[in-house]
Length: 332
Ligand code: ATP
Ligand code: MG
Image (cartoon, rainbow, N blue to C red; front, side, top):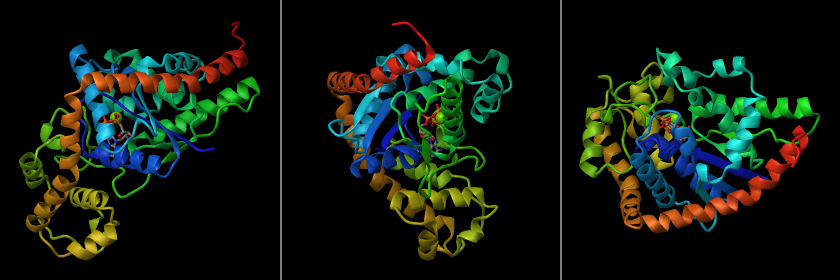
């Protein structure tokens, strides 16, 4: 039976890329009736420095973001990673399965560690093995993610295959990434070659889910573009990364294809298209941010939801960890 797992880091403010690439699609999976497990991956967040008070706040705000985006804790399991120790426990086993050479090929580590990789945490380097454990501790079959996570899901499959092969079992499934829709890689509003990220120091690079209407309009107005009008076919967006990004965002928000957006807007200047895009973004995000703000007035309720989700998650994870330990030869 299919089982969906996905996670988001409480490492900063949720942005439009997280919404279109992840949250919106999580709600779709849940509403199609697939068993879904969603995790605030706080142990991944601390692979780079997090102020403790901010981490706590960001975890609750992320939970509010999940719920406001349509994840119903009565239908889906919603919790934070550190409350389910089995993730880190299986993560250790996978540290011993994954090879140094595999990890060195991960482009996210290179991006995040930057020039001074010697000074990056060991956790940041090992992160994809813990991510594999997040997924496989539930035997999840499908992982909805943005395009940037494709390489990590491939590594998850490599780890599952090597474990199964080394121990001569058919235990961990080959998980499928689900990367769908027009906005699987939302780019920075300031630089069409960089993805929109929580950890980008530039506020102007992203639209936060909690930005008010004026802020959204001003960020889109200032978004980098080229001087040409919109083409009437997708082909015309080739070599125009900033223009393509804004069209992709429009398509993702409106649930349209790029071709449909261009059929309606082709020939328009950005001075005309940008206000339409802002209106659409505000219409979609305002109800979510209002609901997030309301939920944030009840932090105790959020904590109770996460504790309950963690106990549901543990029920699935504990037997899979026990079986793993038996396979590996740990006495218990
Ligand atoms: P950080 O910069 O701290 O890594 P992030 O913005 O990349 O934060 P994550 O928590 O790492 O967010 O990722 C959560 C989910 O959002 C993942 O499924 C990821 O693929 C997706 N995602 C992140 N950025 C984008 C983006 N720009 N476009 C589409 N999906 C995205
Ligand atoms: Mg990321």
